[in-house]
Length: 404
Ligand SMILES: Cc1cc2nc3c(=O)[nH]c(=O)nc-3n(C[C@H](O)[C@H](O)[C@H](O)COP(=O)(O)OP(=O)(O)OC[C@H]3O[C@@H](n4cnc5c(N)ncnc54)[C@H](O)[C@@H]3O)c2cc1C
Image 1: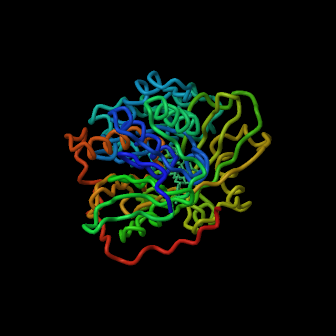
Image 2: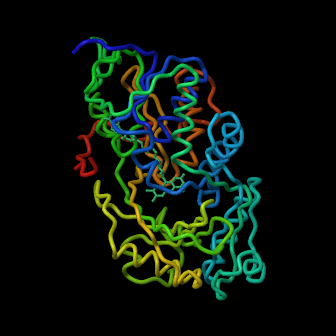
């Protein structure tokens, strides 16, 4: 195959993680080629919500790294010559029982002790704030710093910023192999359109990252965790900001000190109420979590369970029509943290495995990856994100790709 071009760094994947990584590297003056097998945001980043949330993070490292990313959004939104729809409206986690309140209060106290603008609203305050919330909801955890954006615009805007800084985009180009020299150091990338010589590759291929890792003999324990969403017709203002049920934390992290009042279908499909208003006057309803391989078909049983759960929290939406649904695959890791790391293969880096937090963590991931590659001090200890916390020597996870 002829050598078509060369680059200082090749980033694989045109989702929010790949475009953010390419953007921060291009900002530092690196000569970048970003390779994407389809279009920008064609993967999970085009099939998700756009929340940048602290409220659904565990106090400690999880909340701290999210805060670092959240703080980057206003600056990067100004810097990009592109409207990414960044708005900071805050979020509400709705609390439906005293048992849930008993868990929510210490959770909220811990985040508040870390300096986050978090507080518990009582029943009167929540209904004054969001009048259409079911009257029996007893309170809510408000997180004032939480924001939202358009995830496809974020990836497009970052990709545009890469090009403005001299980077090159290669959409509709599939990486088929990574080339190593005699010392095991990265020396290039093979694609279906030619060869790119480079000493460094960043694997930002989301749920496909294990397949890219396998090209250099590295096992990445990332699995697709399916999530579905419903989109409503344009309607009256149902709610002014992001709302979720507090029980969402249980479906995300597992484990619980109390039982939610749900149906067997809701438990089976990991359903928890999520509401997100859009700027266009529609709203999104989620959420679900299940492991069904690479399947992105929408399932009526899951949709019904999500709709029932949403009506429980906002009865007024009972008669509003849903105009479409879509399904995405979250890149899940066993400990819920992404992998943002150099590897045992010199020149091969990984930025993948962000599960349901990739939009929110995109900017800090790009920044950390640029710091790791430049050998600079990082904004936060990247030990918890290192690939070394997993065994990488086991067999490559077998994936059945039905999404092409
Ligand atoms: C229903 C749902 C709701 C969500 N809501 C939120 C939310 O509100 N907030 C939040 O922070 N996160 C949310 N997430 C999670 C978030 O969407 C993901 O964490 C994030 O999009 C992952 O981005 P990524 O760039 O790693 O992966 P992707 O966007 O999938 O990008 C990977 C890219 O790699 C490309 N690729 C793969 N193989 C190759 C190859 N061989 N050659 C070239 N290119 C290749 C793919 O085409 C793809 O475009 C949600 C996810 C889902 C499913």
